[in-house]
Length: 78
Image 1 (tube, one colour):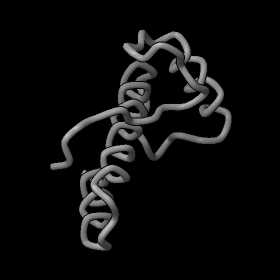
Image 2 (tube, one colour; image 1 turned 135 degrees about the vertical axis):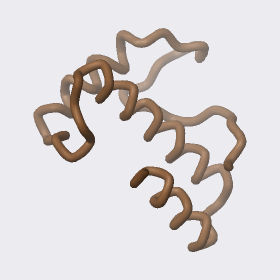
Image 3 (cartoon, rainbow, N blue to C red; image 1 turned 60 degrees about the vertical axis):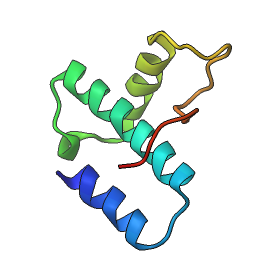
Image 4 (cartoon, rainbow, N blue to C red; image 1 turned 120 degrees about the vertical axis):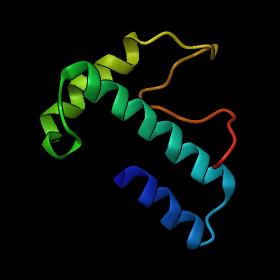
């Protein structure tokens, strides 16, 4: 999968585990949105970003306050 290759690339480039975790979390949210919309990641375009932001705002969060976009709180890389 392209997302895994991207994350592996970040590991190979020496990015921080926290940065990789944040990207992984964001990618998970993106692919959740794509699945809900019945879209493939290759079909995602600019106008879809606004629908994704609305989707993220409606999604339940364990954080006290939601931001405009996804961010990682804690997770384990690979």
